[in-house]
Length: 95
Image (cartoon, rainbow, N blue to C red; front, top):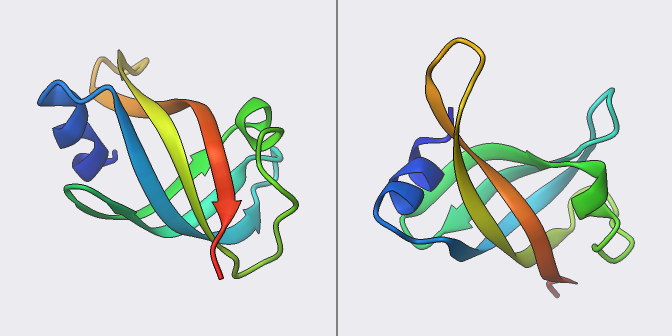
């Protein structure tokens, strides 16, 4: 669950700027970001899928990254609501 992103999406926000620390890749190849700052607070972690990752510059462990992403509310298999990030763009490594 991503409560901070979920609050944003439920309030009608469909796109937001995110800032997080790149923490490598999951076993499935997804990019993992930690301490992700949003307009509504900090998400402890989130991941971006391989398609989104293809739009990022080359990343090294520990890089602080800023990017824009669309928020998409969806129902998980167990029926609970969650939010995912889509259409990641305007990614840049911060100094």
